Length: 203
Image (cartoon, rainbow, N blue to C red; front, side, top):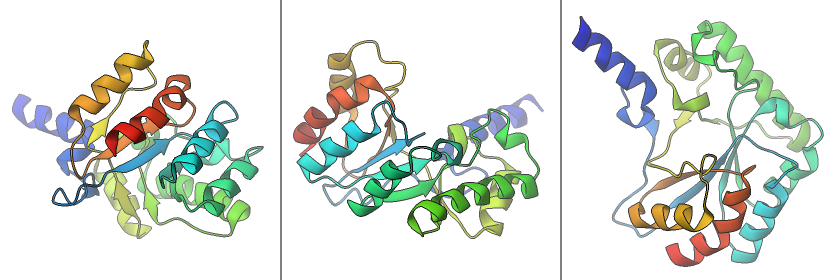
């Protein structure tokens, strides 16, 4: 029983395990490319700075946005879309207890986020990143019922807890490899401060 529970907890908390739900967490390792992704925006704090850096570097990215954060930041969402970035769904509420909702309530939350995105840019994403990367049978059913594609990551930068931007940059570059789906957060101060150097060094 203990072993069974341990496997279930590990599978639930590690989206890369594809334990309950198949998620895209890595690209083709034979091609020297990476995917830069951002969670939790749009944010009035640093999203615009991040977008300007990406534009200057001519680097496309994917933004997994929270529906409730769109209100008041519609211009940033339109800028993401106009500048060719992918916009994905990261739930409307991003509630800590999101994964404990019923399948139907979970799907309502996801669709509420899509409605906010469509209101702003006229598009409904089919890419979904589960809040906190937590999966379980209910999340799997909601994703399947909504015909979404689950997107995870292979390299988590922990940029939101970084205390030093130089260490954040070096640590990320040290473990970067072909095919990585890199997870940043577009509201983070250190994220914005290392992003340009990260792109140059990755190239």
